[in-house]
Image (tube, rainbow, N blue to C red):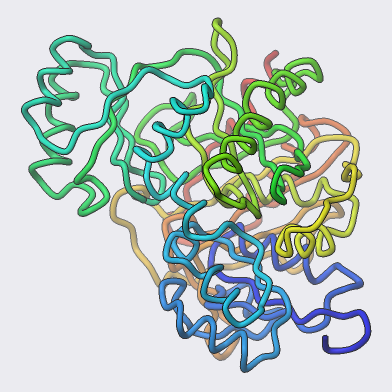
Length: 428
C-alpha cells in the first residue's frame, strides 16, 4: 500500500454514477490517490483522468499496475461483462465488482431468467427465442400487452413495452431479423407485462454476506408523467415509502438470500453490487431484472445517504471478506434530476458549452455524466444525459425544491429536464 493505511483507487467509467463513486472514495480517510479512466469533465476538474476505454481490458490492467492501484472500483457493466475483474485478479489487484461468470446476470437476460427459474426467484413468465417464426407463434398464444427484451447489453434501451400486437411483432422482427440492437438482440426474451410500481434495491455483496442500501425509485421515461420512450434514467429518489420495513424483510427473504444461495450453488462467487429491479405487484414482489453494478442515476442519491466510510466496505467485498453488520444511513431524503441534451434519447448535439453556478447551496451537488473539459476549463456537453443535480433534505419535498433551484441556475443550449421527479412519492 502507498502508506500504512491509504489506498490508491482507480474508478473505471465516465458517467454520473462514476462521478458519485469517485466523490465517495475521495471522502474516505483510507483513500490515498484517486484516479479515473476515462472520467468526464467534472471528474477531470478534481482528479487525474486517463483516456482509457472501459472496453480496453489490457490497457485498464496496465494503468492499474503503472499507477500502483490497490483497489479498482468498476462503474459500468461492459468492463464487468468483458472480464475486467478476472484480469485484475491475475495480478493480485482487488476490484469491486463481479467476475465475468457472475456478470452474466446482466450481460445475458436469458441467463438471468433461466437462473430465476432454476432457483425459484419470483419473476414474470417468459420464453427465450433466437428465431422469428417460433417467437411470432408465441406472440399469437400470448398477445400484447407484452414485453420484448434484447438478451444482451443494450445500455438500458433494449426493452420494448409493446401495448399492441403490431408493435410486438415489429419489435421481434427488428431485433431478430433487423439490427435494432446488433448482437445484443440476436437472442430475445418475450415476457408477460407486470403491473405495479417499480423499486430498486442495491445490495453490496461478498459471497453470501450482504448489505442493503435504502430502496430507491428511478424514472426511466423521458417525458413528465412517465410518458415517451425509455431512457437510461431521468432522475431518482430515495427512500420510497412503498418499500416498508416489512416489505424490505420479504424482499431479502424471497429474493436476495435465495439469489446469493443460488449463485453459490452454481459455483459463482459473487462480489460487488447486485441491483434488483423489482415490480411491486398485487401478487407480491417480482424481479424484473438484475444489474451487476450500481444504477445510474440511483447511485447519485444512494451514496450521499450513506453516513459511513464506503471504501473499507468496497474493499472487503472485493477481497471476498466479511462485510460490516450494517451501514449507517442518514435520515431524510435525496433526489437527483438529470439535465439531458435536447433530443435525448434520440439524436442530440454535443460540444455545447455549459454555464455552471459559481457556488452551490449546502446539501446540493452537481454530478457530471456526459461532459468534457477543455484545457481552459470550459465544460461542454458530450452525452445524452449531461448532468445530474442532487439535493438532500429532511423530506423529499425540500430535497426536490433544492435540486430544482440549482437546475435553474445551469445553462446550456437544448437543456431538457423532467419537473416531476419523485411525483409518486410526493402525491402519496
